[in-house]
Amino acid sequence: MVSAGKSLTLEVAEYASGASYGSISASVIQRAKEALVDGLGVMLAGSASDSANAVERYVQELGVSGKASVVGGSMMLPAQFAALINGTSGHALDYDDTQISSAPDRVYGLLTHPTVPVLAASLAVAEEVGSSGRELIAAFCAGVEVACKVAEAINPRHYKGGFHSTGTIGIFGAAAAAARLMGLPSEDMRHAIGIAASKSAGIRVAFGTMTKPYHAGAAAENGVVAAKLAHLGYRTDPNALDGQWGFFQVAGGSADPELLQGKLGNPYTLVEPGVSIKPYPCGSLAHPSMDAFLELVLEYDVKPEAVDEIRLGTSSNVLNALRYQRPQSELEAKFSIPFCLAILVLERRGGIGEFTDEVVLRPNVQEMMGRVKPYLHEGIEARGFERIRSLIEVKLVDGRVLSKEASTSRGTPERPMTTGELAEKFRDCAQGVITERRQKEVLGLVYGLEEVGDVKQLTRLLHK
Figure 1: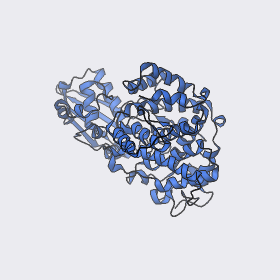
Figure 2: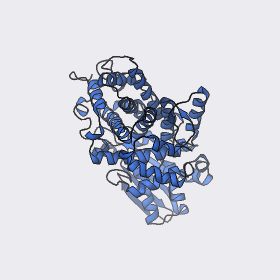
Figure 3: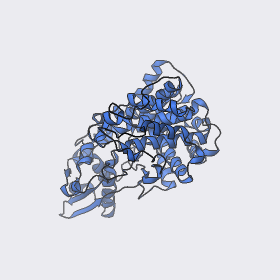
Figure 4: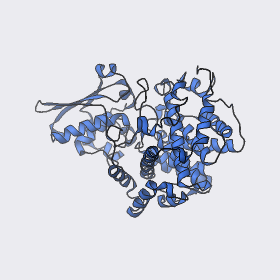
């Protein structure tokens, strides 16, 4: 059970309600802007996905209208419904950023996708209430911080047991950001967090299906709803994260309060240990292996016909999440080691254009996947899960064996993307959705967001 002492719910509420632009350092603000660029990009890319389109049709049938924009679309909706669609779009391609482990027993890659649920909620509410760029930055930073610190504090059993923390914990960041933009005092914020605790949901059985991106959308939507209800005087237990029946105990079995108490904004997770921006639109647990394998393919000019077998030894947390051996759709392929490696030797890239149903079902892709052999590497397993480790061995038909170890990938704090690389990813995501001129304007506004008087200056550029 969570130890007695100051209520963790109160700690979260006091921090989130008191967050202000002036209290955030320049380094955190810069990192937040990078996260916003990445988040808006993946929302634009995902706006054409089947997952987002289905949710958009559902909302259309409700016949509602409002002041918040659908990114990559044309509808104007109440904030909660815009957040639902944009959150689903942002996670539809599994191209959004990931939280990094802060402790050896917190499994790397199994925390949250921090940006999308918070951005979807805060962007919609900011537009609805007429917030400035500075207010959006403050709310976004606070929301991401709440989600990340709650994810760090809860017992890792939460994720290992089957909960998808982007949905179950992303909602707290979304609620905190929405409530901050609405100007809720700490007491109302406390109840917004408590309401969110009862609406928290998402299980890992949905990985490889349309419901995984819905987790991010629902977290954003429900966070906004929780904030709006609290603003209207709706009440719940004021200590909903704490005690025998609180979120930490029920959903995780326990928590480590010292990972949250006094740690909110001290330091901000955005900069320490940082978050990871994805170089590929698939599960982050595959990325170190993909980068290392692609380096081998390019260095030795490996042709598909030269490959006899590709062996990838890794730990159980990677194998459990990337579970599809012969995927039949792009959604399954995002969680498939055989596809993620096969496509790199066939196409020498693994971008949005490669993760499609048509590509996955191509005979040469299906055949190459049969040559990829993932297995549990006992030595890597024994080293722990605070990093994503693997050993790639490529056996060629001429008898040679090429090998490389992997433990990091592009986009991580160890190998961060440059501003130019991030802009390139944004343009690739936005291609065909908004014009090149608008792409340039969006990038300029985000990097100068503190000077934007009304967030609508940004959101009007994100319409189709």
